Image (cartoon, rainbow, N blue to C red; front, side, top):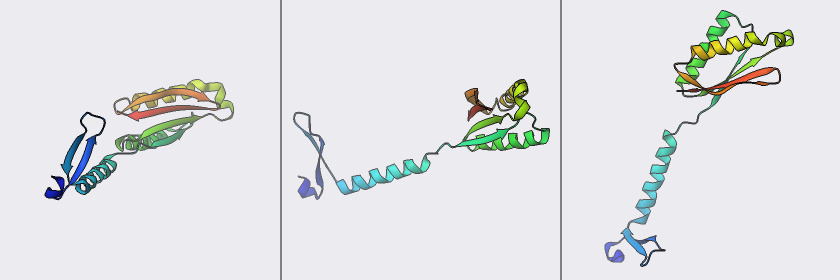
Length: 132
């Protein structure tokens, strides 16, 4: 029947009793499946992690510039890794850095959520935020 129709006989599930076959144009089927897969690849977005480095004694304008960059990253759908680095005697006043990270969390609360809370890694504190 498949030869008369000029098509292929394709075995769908060989383990059934009796085996299930279908008459179709296999080349066309493979082409459409390939096209569908490439379309799915086009639509997917790779989420990148952008890093923003801060210092505890950051000035107001520098903070504003970093926040604008962070908001732009969230709009693009990227995650943001905030690295707060302490140098020298800044380690003695870690509460300043903690306040700064809380300020950042509060500023981006409506557009981002905390994926990984602030944790110490040597002389720096790392926090990861993801877009909502």
